[in-house]
Every structure is written in structure tokens, then in C-alpha cells.
Length: 327
Image 1: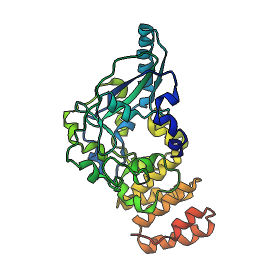
Image 2: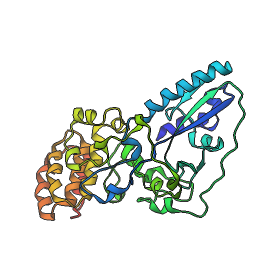
Image 3: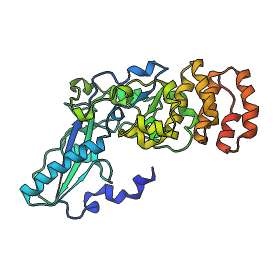
Image 4: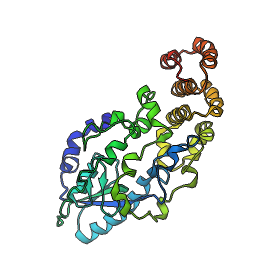
């Protein structure tokens, strides 16, 4: 995640990003789910996609609305404006907390007393000098549910996230093979992870979002791993068109699906992994090897190992074949 460090000075002070800014308006849009976002975690034949990615890409929806609001402000205040939705070096969560929208919880995500942990954030920078709101106090108290819910122990201390251990980072941002120690804890999480958000007690005050433009797509609520594994690039793009999932790319997504297949304990899915041993992408082939090492008996796995290892030229895939089978 070098992009965080590259613009560190801009993140530290909004005036470094735009020297003329005098005020920042922070806005939140609820995407609270109507159903339990963790319900599919126990259904090993299905994939679990983070709530925010089960719908149209929020960047597109919110940025359009911010531009409308910013245009109105510019006319009323005779001021210049700029809008940002998670695509510029802006520290949205601290700014939102300073503006009173909520506080950064122990899981580092913004928490609202009205909307829980389910908020998309947007910012309007302006040259207008506006009255400011009071920062929101921290209401986490002694609760540590978000910390203990993390499958990979990604919180070394409260309010600190080690992204290298975070399933959201690993399944979305990480380019290489998933580190071995995190594969089993991933379960069937194939894009993102909501565990630390979903267990927050403040979510009980959140009302399910009724925003039509951010409505959940039914096919993304509980997709079958067997179907996802067979998506080629064109089918992947069509299946996840205009959603956040599309930006991770087909190969990394199928890598995630294969990790979930390896965790499924469902031998019927081994046939899908076998097919993907011939995939052009090394990252897919390597994940397929790991999945089969979990689903097949040792003798079955050994029968596959010798011929495939002999013809495999990629070092990372060869390393996967050389690991001891787990099943």
C-alpha cells in the first residue's frame, strides 16, 4: 500500500492538497444491510462478499451527489469547491470525526450513534469560511467485540490496524499469493471482510438503507463458489459490472475463490480446482494447488503433483506444489 506513504504530507494537512481550502464539509451515506452480513460465513459452498461491494460502486453514486451539493454551495457562498470520495489523499475518517459525524472506533472505522459502522464518507473542500461543528466523543467504552472478532488478529492494539493481516487488504489490495498463515482464517470471505464492523453494538440503532442506487444485488448476496470459480475474464467483468469487485481483477478474485474452496471441506469442488490447475495466471494455479491439498487425500494429491510440478515454470506455483498436503 505504497500509495499511503507517497502522499503522506497531503494526508496530514488538507491545505497541502489544496492551499486555498478554508472549510471542509463531511457527509455520510448509510449502507446498513437489511440482513445479517455474516450469515453466509457458515455456508461453505457460498462466497461471502463485503456488504459495500454487493451493490453499485459507491464512488460513482456519492460523487455525483456531492457535485450537486457542492455546486449549490458554490453559488450560495460565491466560493470555489472540490469534492472527494475516497480517491484522493484525504483522511476522511478523522475529518468526519472532527465534524461530529461519529468517532473512530477501536476497529479504526467511523462509528455513528445513528448508523453504526455502515457509512460511506464524502468530502467537500471549499474556500468559503463556514462555522464548524463539535467533534464527536468516543463511545466505544470498554467494548472490544470488534477486536476479538477479527479472524486474523489484525488489531495489535485498540485503534490500530495492521493492514498486512487484514482480510480486506489481503483479498482486495494484495497482489501476490495469500500468505499461508491467513488462508484458513479467511474461510469463505472472497472479497473484503465485515466481521469487525458487523459485531459493533451500535449497529442496533442503524436502519437498513433504502437508497435505491445502493441496493444490494441479489446475485452478490450468496454466490456459489462452484459458479464463481469458472468465470473467465469476460464473464467476471460482466458479473461484477459497476461494482467495487470489478477493480480487483479476475485473477486475484479467483485466487480468493480458490482459497474459499480449499476451506470448504467439500470434495465436489475439487473438480473446479483441478480445471484451474491449467489456468494461464500463476496466482490462480498456485491457489488451485493449495485448494486441492486441502480437499484431496494425500495419495490423490501426490498423483497430481509429479506431472504438474514437472511442467510448471513459475517459481511461486512450484513452491505451492512442494508444500506438504494438508488433507
